[in-house]
Length: 458
Image 1 (cartoon, rainbow, N blue to C red):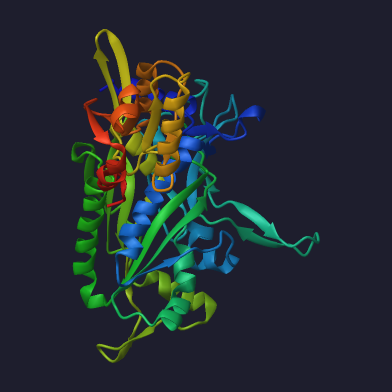
Image 2 (cartoon, one colour):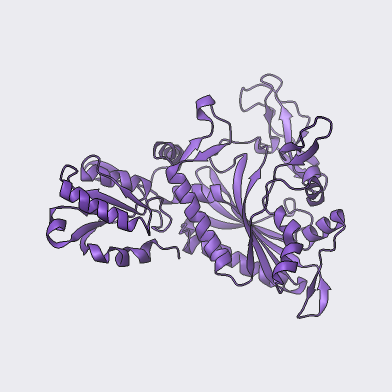
């Protein structure tokens, strides 16, 4: 495994070189904190989404899916507290005019009032600009990270709106619709994968913190008396999902509870699943006990009663909410970090991604041993056409078979199928497994039965 201080650079390089991630608008110099997922990246990202959706929605009897709009009524963000409280603290540099977050500088200690968005300086630290070495002004300024836009086309009649600062707010706004149309019984959940946008100031950690990103959220509605038990159950469920399904190493994961100075005022409890990134431990997913704040606030601002009838108790109740909220980009990034391998074999370096086979962007590569042998090529093409109906398959005939193996290793392809002269004699092919590099002969007719258990989402 490479040294951590070099790992970040190697992952960023691999992502560009192998078509996982590109800087957005790169031909114009790019946009800080905005990325596009390339051909390999979008396959890996979609596999992660499909895995989450399968495990979280389709396999759960009491969780309902949602795909909410990016734009919502502006009052929703007032109700949630984002308009007033979604702020970052900034100090200005006298020399280079940059704006810097002081809570990221040595010696500073600040405390945020999550209700008003105000920041209180508990300890003033370094006033040296980390960018130019100039002097920072000690006065704290506030910067709201919500991205503003406008609705309407006539100047003077446009309405201020916001791009979603967090994905989950749709769930609270559509909660009443789901109760009325799906008739759920407590406890039940609503799940969504959605875009979110933030005017982040502190960037520079690749996919970890970006201005446009996706989140997967579950809002689980429970009776108040059952909230604590449900909260602990969801903590275990989410930990198990990352370790048993995404296959992140437990040595790179930890639990971290929010301290009293960090816990938002309405929350009963909050824990993060942290991943050990090249710069240290940081949040991968949060699991929050939110009480009934969200439904109460949206009900108050909208004038709509968001309580529901609990059939079992035969009474009206405003459910408590257990939330799990994670970032797809962070999971994508963590998975690449976790699976990156380097080794030396017979004096040559080998780089490979030890991805779970069912998440790999290419699941099978078909390699005719000699590309000028038309009979081999026809047979290889026939196998490719058959397997691509069920799996993500790539046909590769460029270069020596050894170089093709290395190319597929680097993008995490778990299985390579080589078609050679023996194939024409007995209708067998060689299957090479990525991590061990072991090879075995197998009948062409048995390929799907042999590979499907490894490649289907668990």
